[in-house]
View: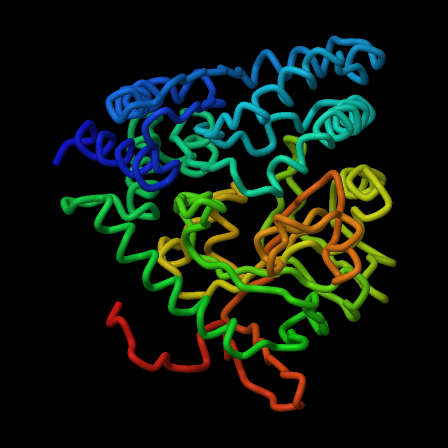
Length: 417
């Protein structure tokens, strides 16, 4: 089957499983210039299935680089009110959100950190009013990736550019369950598998998790009334959607004030257009009290200065080391892919859906349960074949979750995947 055929199947999966388009949906697609061929295919499907409006916003990383390099700090630190007002108007009209773009790891490596810091802070503040709309759960969203020459050349420097791009597309299709079969059916089966692990973890109702591995010894309590999510999310009116494509994780909310120990990254972190290869965080009472990085230490400093809760965790996610993405033996240098090849945490904002009835609770009510509230949400990877995770229930019973990076239990009534 040709690449064009695979691309059509990929578009079908994103439109019909990812955003799960319904008649009269309003949708905004944030994309980049390299992703337009795929976005055209997706848009065609959205219109065919009765979308009411489809807005496409096109970004160009080179234009962003020029702005970061040439613009004044005043310009970088200013987000006009009308831009936030427009974003809020889209939320109020329930424009479902699609992000279809390529990764650009290290693209801003030569930009002064002060410039990135000023822009990061300004944009974080401008986005803050949008969070309450996302927490309600009415807005479907999906993030998916495309191959580009920049990303492909970075991952496969020994290949000619065309072969590198083709190789990256192959890995994207493989990671997103795109093959000769019906992509929608593939995703329905994959979702069933993830839901089986979701159900098992929710049945255990663990009080805390104990992580042990090279450079990692961390005790993570879970928020009160937490719930695990794997695969699809569901809107309040019962419409399922797949927020990340690919996805292999089962995730929930840690308690923002009850995390102690230290953790070491196992994969690089791509953030603010820069790469941080190796780093370690030390936690006390839920807060990062010390951190080290071999390079780009100032990027982490910028991150932690975003707001008072940016040093606290908002997500804990379990991914077995043998996930399909991990089996590609490829370091994608993209959080969307690398987080689905590895157990990970996220600093910052927690997800309302991982708290029972979270969509109807105020920030203060969720925080009382242990859920974090922040202007950032940054995932970092800590999984490996040497990671062990032990779950401890309220009654003191200890149950292994991962042993040497793999599920330590067998599900009853296995679905056979």
